[in-house]
Amino acid sequence: MTRLLALLLIAILAACAPRPGPAPVPPAQVTAPDFGDSDPFDWTGRTPAAYPVHGTDTSRWQADVDWAAARRAGVNFTFIKATEGGDRIDPAFAANWAGAAAAGVPRGAYHFFYFCTDAATQARWFIDNVQRERGALPPVLDLEWNAHSPTCRTRPPAETVRAEARRFLDIVGQHYGQRPIVYTTPEFWADNDLGRLGAQDFWLRSTAAHPSESYPGARWTFWQYSGTGIIPGIPGRADLNAFAGSPEAWARWLAARRR
Image (tube, rainbow, N blue to C red):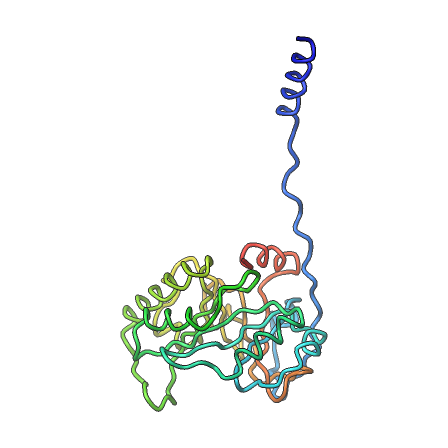
């Protein structure tokens, strides 16, 4: 009986003892960028250099990437083109996807939206060609006008654009367990009032001004600040991108979204 009372007392004390809070998220392993630019912009105000976490995005135009060299040069993340429309696969996707992973570069896949194919078809095409993989960054929906497309230069009404975007985001987000990021340009943002998509990670292109100037009032997670970058390990011109926060914020963002 005495032993039973002692065990009961221990259990009560354990239940009442304060529980430790969640462990702090350690800073991500961030390498400072050692990038150049073949056509640099004369930045004023808040510049890309104000952000410590930088990366790139890649497609067939950046084939034969030496990902280990790019990682050493400060590529802390990359988004890799996977699909376009409802029937096209980027021919460099598989090599870039595997190479970035082997070099330890956090990477996500992106889909270039085609306005002559419905969103559900495009979402299924992306899902069919991008394996759900633990640790990958969220997928990306690339929304921009394509004035040079040989087959589809249509510009649907803004309401249609947003409805189709939401349809793609919902289907793909449900499949991968995390809502995709939306990439866009100043023109497309203004034409379609993309801020009305609601709570959303945005990746914004702005190569001649800070996003706060190109997208007044918008909240952003990634900023594409150059399309003429020079990165060791990447042949030719490279896109340069910055994450919106500190290394600690980057670690928290990764922890919440890499699944």
